[in-house]
Image 1 (cartoon, helix red, strand yellow):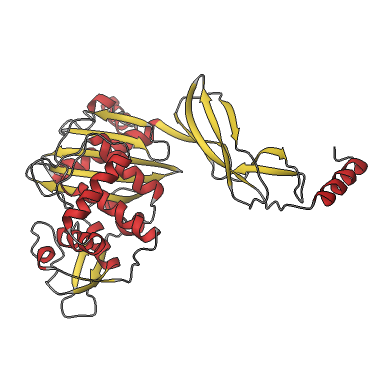
Image 2 (tube, helix red, strand yellow):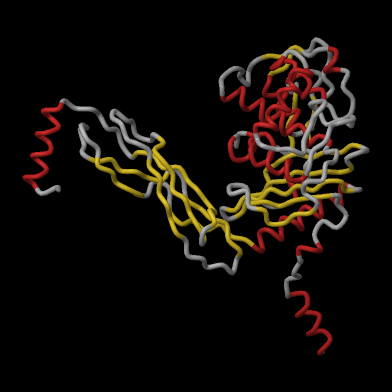
Length: 378
């Protein structure tokens, strides 16, 4: 009876995973909280290694930049070149001369990791893969990353083509935070291309965590002989979004298992605490020669900090406000609020104006002031 009771207790008790036990079979890896970029776990994060199709995350950033700038549209039609159709590795089997929408190409990149789709998109945007790769390397530099260099847009093994766990995490964060539309594509588990033709093609996501790990909606897998099995996974639960990077695994099943354990560790050890809600009044500033004699300054987004579960920190706030010149519209960026723990800056959030302010004639300004003095607003 005692033995049975002991077994029941063991089964009911959660098994605690320690950081040093995480991703033991990987070459390198990292776990971060997406919004703040805070590192929760790291292993050889600056080691320069092959990253296979995780390379395509930088291509996706450029694609979404072009969409945002309205240089291209999802319903634009690309004509597939011989160069794109001849790409090996993972593909969606594009044919030379085939016409396909950019949206379908993006699905092919995001769901099936299609090399042919990536090259077709690169050629559509930049005219050639070489010019597109140059732009990818410029983007990496813009992000301040120093352990990444690309020689192609697909991630196929090639000399001088490498990145690191840290750089991949920052690239993934750039996608998730600044181009969240990526999640519309990366969260697709299955779909079809050429659906109403005799060449219907079934897409199934190469990232099995999409269907097998709660809250996962991205982001990118990778596998080549040099890189091994790699994964950039992002998962959101209870207002916490994590990004896990695992590189150099020998088997896809082990990669998936260790990535889930890494994410489990994050969700079990950190919390995101909201200090102030979006839209809350932060400051009120006097404004001269305007139709109102003040402007309310509010938070653009929730002001969040990342803490360990047992933390109960008290924070100090600093407010920096730009010069206010009328006229000025509602929602104009006007400064920022800074959160400090002791002297360390741990969070920042943009401040915006709450309403429009219009310039008024000098006489109206003085009359308004007089009215406010009479009714006691000063």
